[in-house]
Length: 361
Image (cartoon, rainbow, N blue to C red; front, side, top):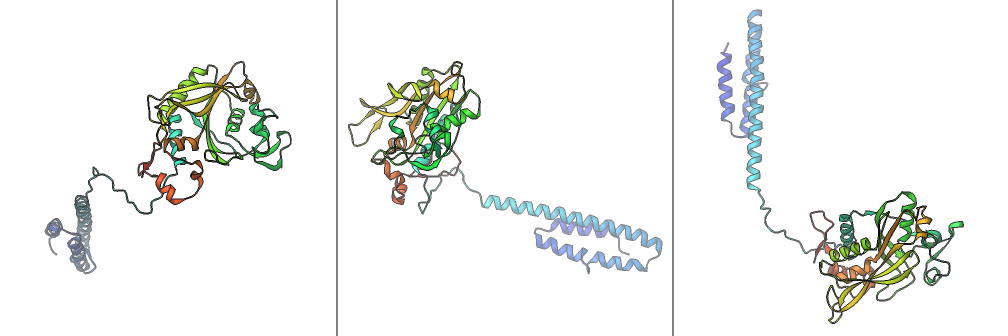
């Protein structure tokens, strides 16, 4: 019989010299295959005495295990070398500027873009998001918000009424604002509250600055200490962040809303002298929001103790904010579905997920 140890050393030497997967496979077949050298040695074991068969057979089995393990180790090593070589050849310089393909790219609609921007700003101020149904009842849309039966907003020419009647909660309608979300949210929870409620609203109105369906975003804070000073700071912080102008001037004027007392109109300084309206400079004022301290009757309608808790609310026309920030002259074009308009005013999505803003292009 051949010397098992010398065979082992010889095969291991071949394995170590193999420099690719093909050469390693040839060694495996020639040594461990059915017609390989080790298989041929095993065939000769049958002619030996029982004592020799036991000794030689055990040595050959041990040899097979050693060779198999050495081949596996060499194969893993060659694979690692191959991967490392590919990584070096296919290396990409990530410091190079991204190339944005100007093909048939989709666009983020300005309204969606502005909603993300506003949500990010209020999110950084600790506000949560609340939502509610587009089809409302008279109770949530008007009664719970302290809006009297004689209010003009309840007339047929202002509100889209539906045929369904909800009994004590009145006629169904398309909500005229997102304020019902505030009542519904307060009903389900307990103070303090701090949230914004963006969404669609509907009113029978259509011109250059109004559309039958539009988007609003309202905010509500209710706790034991909320006051007009907090409201003023919130409005100034939001507007300066949204219009990216730390020097923006905000003016509050007395007004009237049934659901707030006192009520305020919110104006920002603007310049109308040129062809483009500029926010944050000039000598004119532009109304951008309504706000005020939550009326005690609204708190009572939501089962909140108005003697212990108080709060403030504010509301913006989301479409109008998009129109002001990005220079869109006619509000109705936001819903025209014109792909040429969207390619001009829309935003390219960034590869890195963010609420900040898309890439204007």
